[in-house]
Image (cartoon, rainbow, N blue to C red):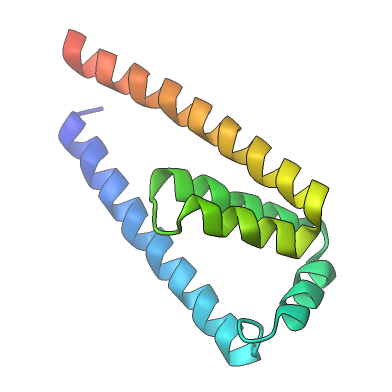
Length: 115
């Protein structure tokens, strides 16, 4: 794939992700979830495994597009899922995402430099 097309694809994906996250934030604000921690915990608990997966997805996006400081998302994980589950979820997902993205970027850069 042409490096110019890769850059366009990354820019497009960034815009789409930011728009989707803004839409979710607006939806949660309308529900009153963002103003009440108990309501947020209850909402995430109702989602079950989907809530944990959504949180993990936000963590992975945070590695690529640093729109949320790492400390804030770590604290959010601990508040939402409890001390040990939140810590394990946040730490493991962030480390796996960083490792994966480092490998993918290294491969992409090496291909661009070698070609």
